[in-house]
Image (cartoon, one colour):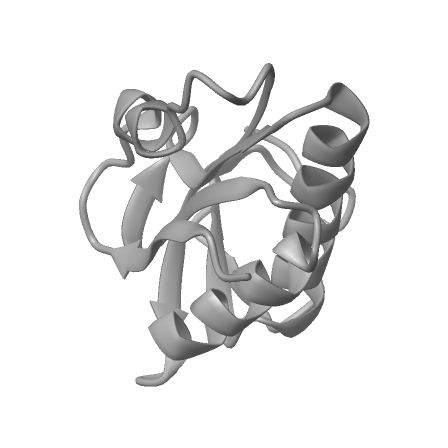
Length: 142
């Protein structure tokens, strides 16, 4: 079954409400969400983080759809997921996920598997900018 309603990578702010609307179904009683935001710190940073710059491989959307489909598996869940690219400030959403399923256990499991697979396998790279003007690149899994 493939109930991935949204799987996109865009250079504009992400809209949680659009993701919730995409998985809205009166037969499903559980909805989980995940929002990954840019934070102002990193254990590897010497000074506060002031922003991130995301770039992606040209095949990133096809990879995201595959990852979402695999995370959904045979659960019967509906999935909506987006990852942002470009310049992001502290507090901006980099990833938004909404999952709807008949029961909460499946919704949580699919959402968790999806974000873990994104971190592990999505061909997106980030450049982290610090307040002292330095920056560093982090690859898949970073």
